[in-house]
Length: 250
Image (cartoon, rainbow, N blue to C red; front, side, top):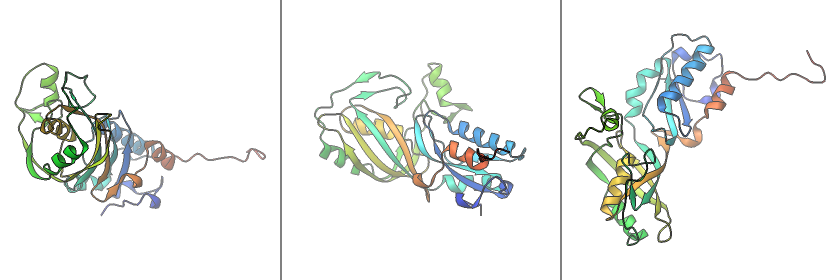
């Protein structure tokens, strides 16, 4: 099994034997960007042909737990992807976007003043369980050998195939209603769940529209956000700066 305790490794760690690095993905980075960064760091350490991958994509506008598998740990990608995920999702009510998040501007607005915090909680309870979910058109889902977002960018209308997912729990974490049409939801769900689609569906069930304005993955399987490492800290761990004594310069 790959080593996962960050305290036990440094530049001399035998990375080819396998390591799962829980990275706190920064805002604006793709999951591939993070993998590319880790691969570059590995190569600078002399691991020229080492494999690097991730277990569970996070959108560029999301932050939080991204499991980066190095060396033999890449064999665990499917296993790690299959584990349940936990998110904190901030949803804005009363407006929709084509991508169901902030990647695209608002395309329609709806009344939201009728929605109460109690109603949100009641509707959320109805999401719990196995269900069929329609992925966003602006997603990396493959259709006829192409990514769905490629069709979307070309203005083609395609029918997205629904996927079976499970939402284990969905609870209100904080709510701005009735003053502000925003609600933060804590969601525990299976792999393959699009929280953007969840936000869209939440708006529809509340008799309004909705889109995702912030998303943080706080857990992936047994890995929690508080146990993750920032990319800048990862680089400092692998390439520590040697301080010299200024009073006795070498």
